[in-house]
Image (cartoon, rainbow, N blue to C red; front, side):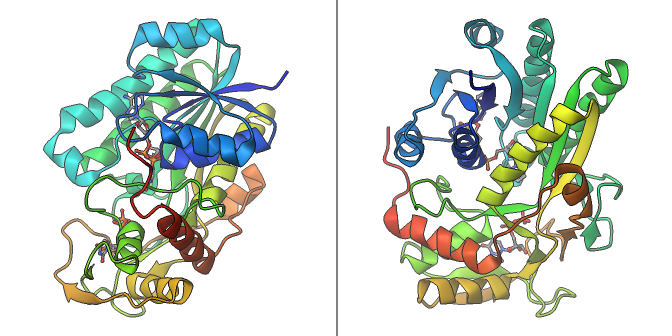
Length: 340
Ligand code: NAD
Ligand code: UDP
């Protein structure tokens, strides 16, 4: 029988790509999602891609009754927890929502896992836990110093996990700190579908290319980088999804806690990304330079060494591929997923 993996937030951006890779690697993913930031039609797209529609339970990760049902009706062996909120600005305005869903939600889930004797957990953390340490290359031992409520919420769950594994060493936990996930599945069937005006660079650029937005606003060109614009370690979402499979496999071998950065080890400036997208789409991306965005860090990227040694994983897809796949998804789905 295929190994059953509970994927919370499995219809979201990173979750849906991970579900596809799990199915293709021979796992049986079971999705728990409340559709607060995703559409039901994702499931049909996953079926088109893999030939299999994963089982879905609709509900909130904080709902103990729903979790009882999930763990009673299935033989779950591990949980990947993608469910959460991820907008920095919103987390500053509504901290209670962020601490409730991201922190309380993870704790309820862990408590229920323990009750059912399931002790293998993969957690979506973020490079935002590092804050702005004053240098560009982050290793896993770079000091943690989040600078907003979203980053704090990730740090808090990490801290809970560190203390849990210390007290109960038979847990197997992977904390994965993502750098900047972008791109889409190369089929163009699944991708990122932000609601409203995208806050992130890649979806914004893509919407300019398709004619949905007039021009990009580049937040500052006076940073100490190659061309003055901010630089990030963009990682293709399919590479990121594969990082989760590698983490699950590493947990079969190691007890305790592993903490790994998932990025490429390269960084790309805003202007470099714009040029790569122009090449991929054969469209011009009009832009203007505006003030820096408050709270932005100039540049950062991961040292990918630990991911390679611990997970035997490294990102394969470069910035051109990230732009090509984003563009294919954008063209095939100019309005994103259909409304439910
Ligand atoms: P997403 O919003 O596309 O996916 C999250 C999914 O969780 C959605 O399908 C949403 O409906 C669901 N969800 C939200 N709250 C829920 C709840 N209380 N109960 C059940 N389901 C709930 O986001 P994503 O980009 O796929 O991110 C997945 C995870 O990775 C998040 O935890 C996010 O913080 C983390 N992360 C994302 C990024 C990024 O840039 N995308 C970077 C670092 C970390
Ligand atoms: N950025 C920009 N214009 C936008 C969105 C983002 O110039 O409309 C810049 C931003 O200042 C940063 C980079 O693009 O230097 C990546 O920003 P994003 O929000 O995608 O990721 P994050 O800031 O979370 O790393």
